[in-house]
Length: 296
Image 1 (cartoon, rainbow, N blue to C red):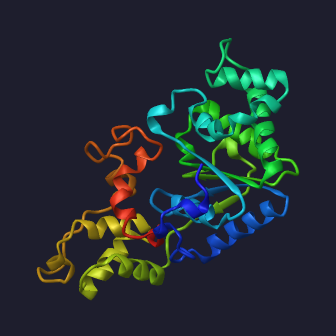
Image 2 (cartoon, one colour; image 1 turned 120 degrees about the vertical axis):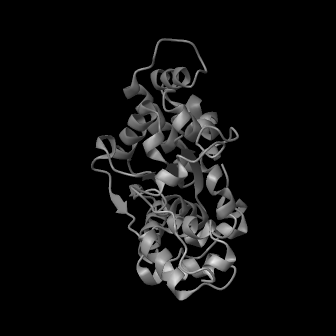
């Protein structure tokens, strides 16, 4: 777990470009959790639209709250309870406070004790009890990124918890591409593409040299408001091309979605081929993120 104050300075933007409304929703969620209420929310939108950056914004703004995180990993989708273990591992010192059957079910799910496959209902109750126990001491916000890549068992348990939050100072926020059956009924925050003015402003923040007006128009048009697409389309262009020195560049089309150009990239950028840490599936974005968080 990392406190907001421990995050790198470039993640401390007061507000993300073109995301005033979305940031307002997250600010109100934080306020409710600090005030002793519970909240669950699904932030959903297409790849590259800025869901992860909104979770980062929430983590930075959640001063006074404990923040724990998990992220779905494609290579772990067949490993039952892998995502849940990410989220709960920092909290397992409270495990002994749970009722016996729930404690045993969770210990078995996490490989801490032997036994048959645990009942998922008991695992769900155990996670709900564990989070509630921690939230009694200090408001707790759980962030689950790339929910669509969680293993099935973890996705079911966390959706179960989201629908059964009590009166605790507890928040669960998911980032997902779509809202499926497990998360049905959980409040949603739909993240759309940026408006043209915001897309142009965002583009200006990542340019390091002059850009021809026609090239700017072409990039903004082809990106369709997707922040990551804006960066991808400028990344492969030489300064002379951006400046219009060789006429309009032949930009790579964004056929289907930005995912076609990121997740189908050659190794080592394919998720699962990167170093084995929690953020390995964002390896392909690390260099771009270092240029500023405001573009996602």
